[in-house]
Length: 183
Image 1 (cartoon, rainbow, N blue to C red):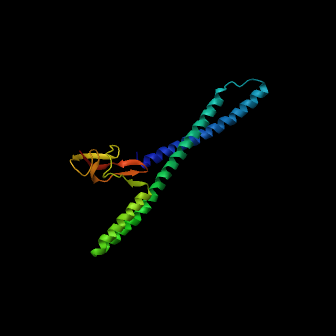
Image 2: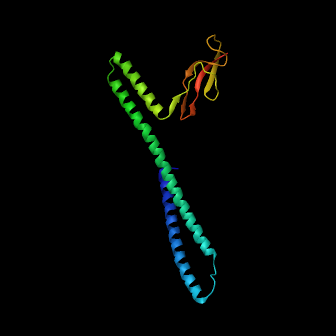
Image 3: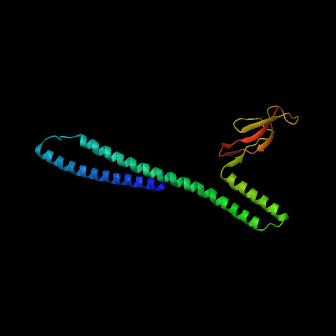
């Protein structure tokens, strides 16, 4: 659904909520008048269901407002979370641009290593950690075995080589390590 359609639907919901609020007020006013008339004639009200309708409409309007507020808070939360990591990564991006502008041999490799460390620190600050693999016991929840090999260096069932590092984000595996396992 496009943002334009979402906005149009939201406007329609807002209009309905406003109409509902107006209907509630009108019914409350007319209910007061009927009560006064009924008190004067000493008769009981004919339609007690109208009070239930008013309660229902009020509850429905409250629920619509609650949904709008929660949706707005959720959007703000996602935007704010992305903003923090983007600010950290923008400094890394700036440093990569500076390094590429000054390719002078020896210092270039050193500069790129510094930027690599800066990027790692920014990601670590956001909750990213590397999964230790080499020499560890094979764990199918953290490691993705793509091959086995015969080796005297490692015991059977241990990770003997890492082909691609794996990472966790705040304790959840987002990419398992691609590994070789010793027979």
